[in-house]
Length: 341
Ligand SMILES: NC(=O)c1ccc[n+]([C@@H]2O[C@H](COP(=O)([O-])OP(=O)(O)OC[C@H]3O[C@@H](n4cnc5c(N)ncnc54)[C@H](O)[C@@H]3O)[C@@H](O)[C@H]2O)c1
Image 1 (cartoon, rainbow, N blue to C red):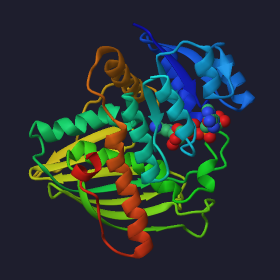
Image 2 (image 1 turned 30 degrees about the horizontal axis):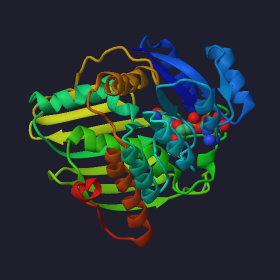
Image 3 (image 1 turned 90 degrees about the vertical axis):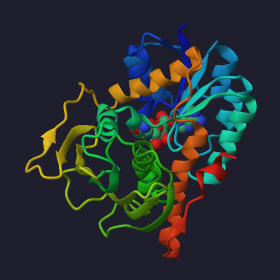
């Protein structure tokens, strides 16, 4: 079966999705949706003409479809999620589901009570480097993870034409838009839930963003894992820097690029060993992996990965950081069991 997908939101991320949906042999684009006519025209010119609509309701009333991919900004998505749920359409929705955990929980409830799958776009889980890191831990190469340092430093020019604009003025853009991926990866790779966090967020004096672009957080996980996180969108240097180093009982794993570059060393080694990784096209390969998981769930009945309910646990990390920084204290995270009840 070919999955007929309505693609709503044709901005930066929507164009990644158009590329991935067009390449996939298991999906067709049933319709484009975007209130901005220029976005609809640009997408049709690049990826082929399809029925195109200003609103999701218009598309739902006009075309036959099997699923929705929603890549609009995470602000006010309730109407679209209710409409898709009413049409019994499985949804793949871009992260973060919402900019408030109570709102996100309500969106999850809407989909669950309609019995409709809701997956969240956590594409970084599907990187070759992520899978290879998990294998290093699972096959005993470096032993069991004990503590980690996660560093993401970037000068993100929010005025660049090829970047979305709403983060320039939203609250805590780094945490909700970027760190959410990193926090989700921590839970995914270490296979444990966070229990508490201390955090400071701030905005450097040169920042072009209204709210904080810098996050420094210290997480403790249920399995004893401790992660020291530092992220910024307003680095003092335009050259990006990424390192995610995990110290383990028998060595270290070190990822040196957001999308690739994995190394390991055993405790007594004097040099790092590179880990071979599969070929990767940035934003496309890992998004195709995410799409495959969605199609496997919707068409073949495989368990749903990156569910909305699971996403609430990563959003809880973001929200806990906001509170910890504002109130200058260590914040306990809601236990996984109480979120899923
Ligand atoms: N997973 C990733 O790696 C990744 C990367 C970039 C962005 N994102 C996420 O994708 C989402 C969109 O980000 P973006 O960078 O594409 O933003 P953007 O501002 O570039 O594009 C958003 C598009 O949505 C359209 N839109 C607004 N309201 C709409 C509605 N009600 N229905 C349909 N379309 C609507 C806008 O007109 C615009 O064309 C965000 O949630 C963002 O966090 C994810």
